[in-house]
Image 1 (cartoon, rainbow, N blue to C red):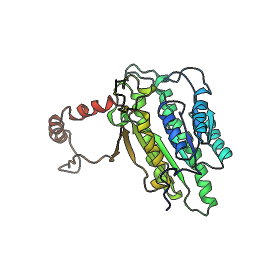
Image 2 (cartoon, rainbow, N blue to C red):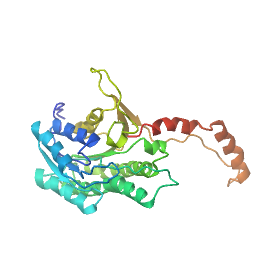
Image 3 (tube, rainbow, N blue to C red):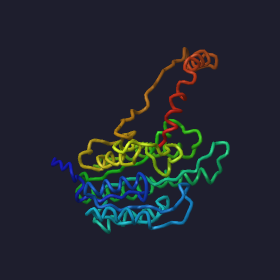
Length: 316
């Protein structure tokens, strides 16, 4: 395989959702730099909670940055959590550039609240934008790649999905039950998609980024840095991994979960069995379970959440 390490995405077309600011912007610029034509999607709302009027400004500004650097880009304003809007977004990429090769799902909102205070709307809106928004675009991209594969006699096509989760799905993130649930759902959706589309040559992977953006401004406040020291939580640290996962070089990378920030990429292992307990008879009794499980967890009291509290402060 020819390896163009400077512009490996020449001839490819990418969609990046939520690309008007923050992580999505950095990812769209990186894909453009690597040679892809980019459809820059953003709803353009001002509030990180999904409030405010829709605006073409953020998406168009990023698309113009890509074009100014010599690349090709088209702006798209729309809510990817709307099924028909997601369909139109994928069709825009196909109509404008001939095909879709890369899908990066990044759009999201926050409506934080403790679980005992959360409203139904706060739950539904976050699940809708994050989880349904990811599903919607995947649904139409997957159908496009399946059709292309069939037209090619069943052979593989270049299809890449990069979804955005968070360490909140591991840590629980106590003040974000909606966000943590959505991010956990995105991991499950991605792994299911990876298995379903592998026969078409399509890969699907998840990133859990730590970055200082509008979404995390209260978690990652600005810090004073020396002039020659890069910000370890800049979205620019995340974008190269997305570019790699979108490339032909990442053909063998499928169904993986990555934590990425500040010059570090960690590959998350799937959960393993920590302990196995067998009943003396065919069925456990209450007393037997008490005799086995109570001392097991008493010895480890606080261990899990002590470690997870650290992660919950670093949600992506």
